[in-house]
Image (cartoon, rainbow, N blue to C red; front, side, top):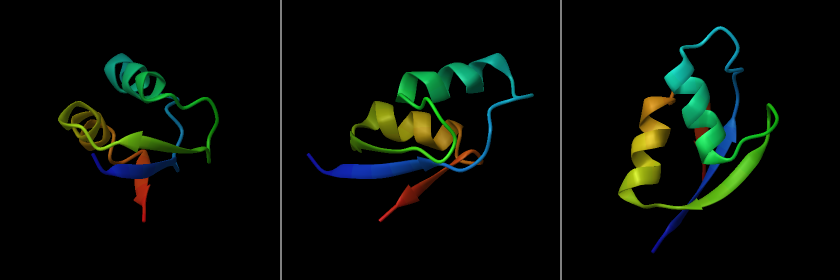
Length: 58
């Protein structure tokens, strides 16, 4: 399975609770943090849900 790198570029402050929970579920702890995840449909769905807060780094 392929992997993707995800970077949090915007804060989750003043966002709906479901978006905050998605950021936490992805594993982000700090703004600017980069994570490497498997590109499963579940992870891609979570990234799509918070696409305005994260960016996919190639």
